[in-house]
Amino acid sequence: MAKTSITLHKNDLPSGLSFGPSVAVDTETLGLNVSRDRLCLVQLSAGDGSAHLVQFDGHNYDAPNLKALLTSPDVLKIFHYARFDIAVLEKYLGVVTAPIYCTKIASKLVRTYTDRHGLKDLVGELVGVELSKQQQSSDWASSDLSQQQLAYAASDVLHLHALKAKLDFMLQREGRTAFAEAAFGFLPTRARLDLAGFGDDDIFSH
Image: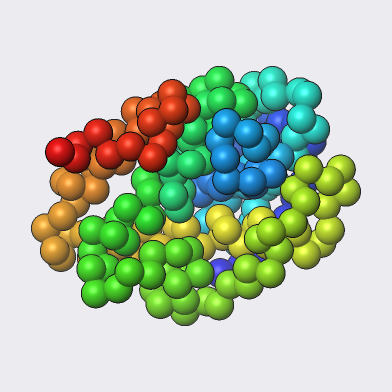
């Protein structure tokens, strides 16, 4: 991977910025409650060692360039735990993100030998990179994010393309690619159920 570069943008991506056919996406919020905790940051990477971070001030969520990217049918959006991120993006940006790939779901379908499906565990095992989670709990609403916060936020998207490649191979090997694709297709509905108050309910259970 090339030397990491991190570019911070305010409230939207610049016009003309392309990520190619697939983009890794993550969000930072004030907490993990979709109903309560606002969107502060969206991180994106083309998988080339560069990350673009869009910082929101809590008032302006217009972001036409970012919205166009998230909804483009020609660009695959790669997440880790997409369910949360796309719910937050729909609530604050008003868009349904698609098409989607979720490395956590893929991991649960093929890494049945473990119950550790966090990004740190996945990247460590499959990509051989040790991620720091030191800044995981920090004030993402701060107007001046620290260099440590920016580096942490970027690290959440820099390895998702490499992860996808490894997981795609495992999905194909185990004959579970179709399961993964069906689950990815259901994610926007699952996110909408979360926003509608069904977050803790398994509607498929007895």
